[in-house]
Each structure stands twice: as structure tokens, then as C-alpha cells.
Image 1: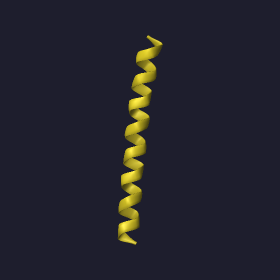
Image 2: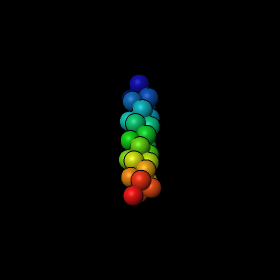
Image 3: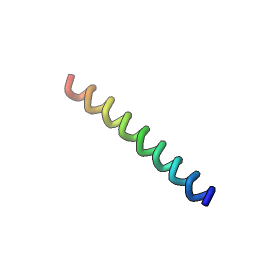
Length: 31
């Protein structure tokens, strides 16, 4: 169970980081 929650937190963190990068790229392209 601990491993599963750890993996989920890693995936959530990766997804959040990816979303942040994509947002920055989209903003940069809109300019």
C-alpha cells in the first residue's frame, strides 16, 4: 500500500510538472 501511494504521488507530481511546462510553452507561443 505504501508503495502504491508513493508511485501515485510520483505520477501526480510528473503530471503537474508536465502541465506546468506545457502551459509555459503555450504562453510563449501565444506571444
